Length: 493
Image (cartoon, rainbow, N blue to C red; front, side, top):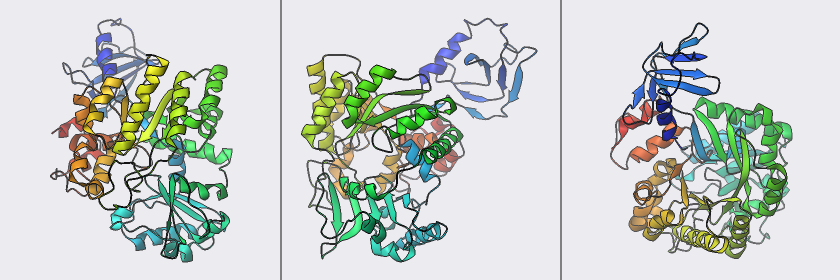
């Protein structure tokens, strides 16, 4: 979510350059317009002709003509369309039609929601999505035994909201031929009981044991999910998304290209970094897209997530001292992909959450620039969540973009300190420190890991008040006002 503040500031300048007699197609009156210009922070009139804004100011008659359509906004707040820098867009479209487990506060509520959802499904239909969070009921991981009796007719593989672990029921594991004899997977974890049998929880690359048993979504289902996702985005003022992927390969991009004439949201579609060679050929044969749909970006992973205790740290977790996280990809393989993708002049964005993961990735990015020469490559680190103090300064020095999602600070922030302790937490979600170090920070949601609403993200970045209201001090009704769409800067601290 990147507000283009210079955009509206430039529009204000246009009013002195435009013909004052040029009539607008549409004239918006009685608005509260955020301009991004400190000299004129708000305006009440917006004049539009075709795909251009003629005027932002206070004169309602300057661009009014005999055929101008006048719209009274009755005091509504107006901002430029938001750009969300990190979504799993098609997954979001499917989740809008799936079971909602995010707000389940107890194991009983978790079980009941799945039971209610399964009751209305045909036998054999898979239940996926979910976006549960075990921290809401104290941190106990769910087990297959919780849901087997209420989902006996339907295979289940519902993911934690961060997408780095998921729960399978017994039927899903039978269909995937996974059991006590199944070997561990590099880059993942099968959680087992005392007898060595899987509990139903699969972390990171171990989730790949279940995925092959899930039927592929049909083109029609993908198209429907895209429509749901676009409508949801527009309802929140999001007019452009960077989609870091929901499915492997080119499924997402192929869906967007199939619907190219129907897109209502601008989309930048990324594919997995391991497919860099295919993307290089794709760009050579098809270019990089147009204003509505662009491609040429690659998304990779170094580690997992804090909530799944799979983010890669130098030191062990405080609450799970037997692990310091894991590597989702072999570092030699990932390094090779990054260097080769960069040599092909493709755009590289890689997920890194733990402090060790971020340091490793910054080192590879530095190596790529030394090897392939200087250019405007705009390397991104997705999340850049837990940083060493040295890393904070390196982002600006290397020209690497911290692509961050501020809602995580108020969601994960409820329990993050129990994972990593009082010292490491000091450089967690370091938005202000990165800006002070001159890094080019960009924001997004990570939908469906977090809500798509940009105002929720702005609220999180400005206040950092956790969802339980405990960190920092309470701020009255600020969050509720944000939900209603009040100007975000009212709550600057």
